[in-house]
Length: 252
Image 1 (tube, rainbow, N blue to C red):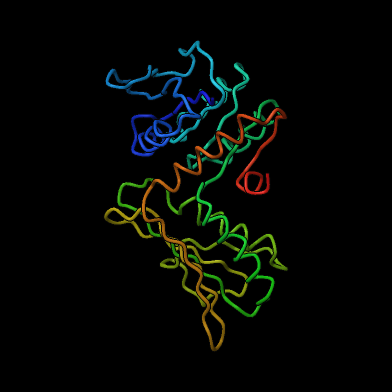
Image 2 (image 1 turned 45 degrees about the vertical axis):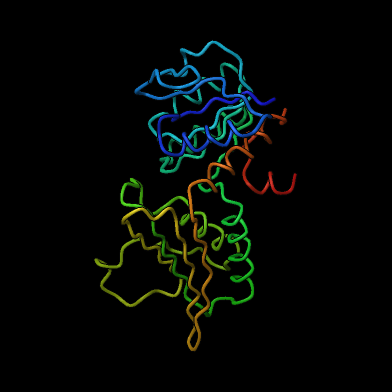
């Protein structure tokens, strides 16, 4: 039995995680964290992690970067692993996550989808095969209420390509103010926000006489929540501190 805490339990993703756990007898929701708190749930909800005094095997966080400090303090002080599925962290926050991961297991991914992580492998393979003769552009589309842009997944894709490129690429996020031809060492990243788009990422390799496209489309938020629950199950069995991601889960 995995005793799970849902951080951001009142949000849309938190409620999907709750529904998945309710249908799985291997999970028990020990508590929820949410700044607003609530009394209409089947488990206790706390506005601050420090208020929780019970036992848990892992925390799944789908809240916001503003909640990170309290979660890291809670996880380290209570020795409870954290699954961080939130995006939009600053460089300082990413450094804080790494420091905390030296003391407890932390699973962090900007995208918990199995399909997206397969896409990352395909991008790496394409970059290796195509070499420097193709321009790389990433277009990401999300719902109108998404706060951060570009998406964390778009940056994951760009970073995956950068790992195998023979040069250090420049990420160009907005071409409107860039009054010059496209540079050979650029990775273009474009963001679209509208309607109820769950998540769509398109990767274009544009050569002189051909274009290759790789694309992942999420049909519902369940795919992200399901991945986060899988990560919690994985992390509950990890004893060594460290920063883990989807590649660790997929090859476990």
